[in-house]
Figure (cartoon, rainbow, N blue to C red):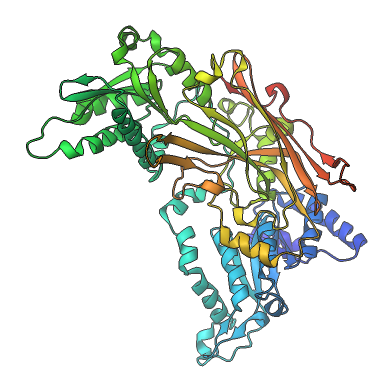
Length: 633
């Protein structure tokens, strides 16, 4: 206790604590002590880091300790590589250690320590790590390099040519070598990009999802999203393909030497989709933009619909000052679901040739439909402003779900209980409480997290929604799904934190060298929701398409407009080796709101071929009837 007080006084970030004792009675007593210390340290910034050896049993003992302490946010672990690690990690079993690293990332891993005795000596007499250990350390840096502390412990024993260059402790050459590994291209490609810099402040920071029909984005938020180097390029490609196919199919009226194409952008924001539409039309007209061919092939009319009055002012300024906009763009301020009530758009109802050939929107949320994209686009369709041949961009999107192990996210969700239930009440508002906090999904850039299984599809929406009848009327957009995630001896190591492209190399190495499996199982703390979206799929020729996705299997590298949606569990579920995870997810609605309900269970396979699986653990149904969280219609 005295040393922790001293650490707080000196503003030392963490105190390193001994490993969990092997004796069960001592382990329980150690947990009681740490639970008390974690509570005392909660008022300061001092973290508690428990030493954990690089073995599955040591990690399992730490996980049990963390549960006994009631999952404190300031209790983390430090992975320790001692002298035996250099010989125990080999090319034959490196996959097992990659699986171990993947699991430890989800266990609030704060630091990694290297004993000087585990370093080998190169030809020049300097310290180096074995190839296998370099691979393990590289994976650690790729996953947690922005937040991970790296320590070197022990007495230096390498006889360097210039001993004076070893620093006061003599450990400088070891640290220099580890810093050299940090500069490798496979690490800097992930940690030193502009995208990585922008994401840093969002890592593991929970954000409440938008109320899309009630919240208006700020100017800075629009500006940040518009810097996405991938999304709007894919939208431009989709619009280009859609208009090109429409030309080939003879869908557009011929006005002399030109074809008239009407594009409606719903939810225009500050106009990036309008710019993408203009750029796509210019690409189609480009072959005619040569001397002697002054008449463009396409004559376009673009209607930009936006409900945010502040953003509408910006759109009007663009129309006034940008020649491309002033020629063909009309700005309309209204709710897209009631666009037919606007006097400017009523003309489209009366004159069919003025109706939309292409509807473009960016209403997707992290889970695809969680920001009411189906309800909004159904509303536009019901207004009657679309031609029978009208194309929607996006055409279809699928929600995906995957289990996640993350002590960090779980602790962050618990911490939301102390925040006001209504943000407008300020810091003195009534706290939302643990139940509401743990039954609310959060947008998060998952970082200290491990996706434990491959994501699976939940449901799909297609637009236009003629096959769904009257759209949102009568709960037509409600959905439900039951998913089963079978045993995976690699614990999903190739999927990383659930927000990256699937790493087939890591997955193959983990599967090939981790065939003995992990006897300790894994703990899940919730589920990550992602989406895969086909903006446009061409039906002609080579069936070209434009796709955006944050699902790891089809991840759009470089895109940062969406982070996963975290569905927490009120209590973590331990999944023993050989067990499967079952999850039920519902999307429900009534006349004034939309919400999600979810529950999960763990089951072991029965003994005989005809026996049913035995449920050994289960969670309650979260958020029934939208009691804790919903999206207003």
